[in-house]
Image (tube, rainbow, N blue to C red; front, side, top):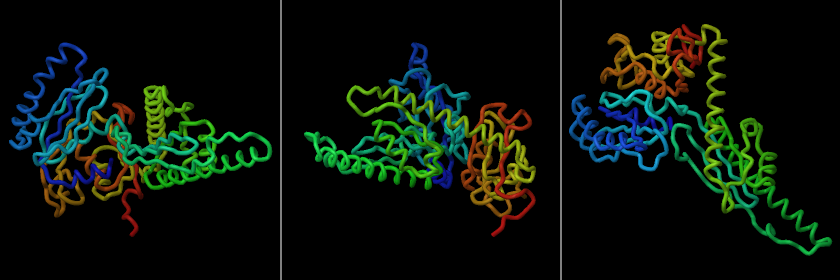
Length: 370
């Protein structure tokens, strides 16, 4: 998703950002939904949104029918067009209905891992489905199927010498199919910063696939011990298991990054607002760590080109100042535009010293080697 978001961030504003609760599980929430659309229009208009953008918001359906439990809708609008419209589980920590020079991407990214990608493989003996996901969006980034050779897969020979030949032939077909699937998974891991590979399906197909994967992909594998394809298979159970494994992987990744920050040489980290802004201006940040509710008292100048963010006009150098935005939204924008990784953390995760910190690509105070 980061590539898609970077494209949006390069588009001109202004932007309308809306993140509101849209659950319909109670009578009160149903009544609130009847009023929500009008309230959003009024709030956006009062915040200075264009008539075109307000009209676009009025045409949207805000309630989330059929979603179990509390949920929220995140919407970005610019130039009279809906750029993002997604429903997510859980109430928003803070309701946002606002307009400004840049989109506020923090609500979209805070709960799901801004750049965490994972692969789901459902392997059968004659085929496999491979889907690549970004944790911040429910739809796959890419998906495809491997359709291998099916000759002899269902033949049941009568016995004798021919039976051995059939078994050998069948095993070779399965192995070749597994090899093709493994090659696709290895390519996804290499090309998309994949952090988790989930494998499920037929037991023998899984075994063969695991034996064919390269070392990088194999080190990321978690297995769901079920075959979700046959008639009557419990897809809901499968989806719950996928969500659990992704949540565990995200938690492990965040813990690893926090340990890296704690153990990093002081020259390879930036702590606090000022140091992190300076590092982003130099495109020096490898990973930006930001507590999702932090920096409520900070704003920054938004720039139309590098260095993308500034705290004063002098810091903007010769770049055009396109407006002022919240500190957290400005940091996230600058991080994405300089190809930094993002970790949006729970309140207090950074130990209470500051809600923002950075791991650096090269030591502070040094110029990047060309």
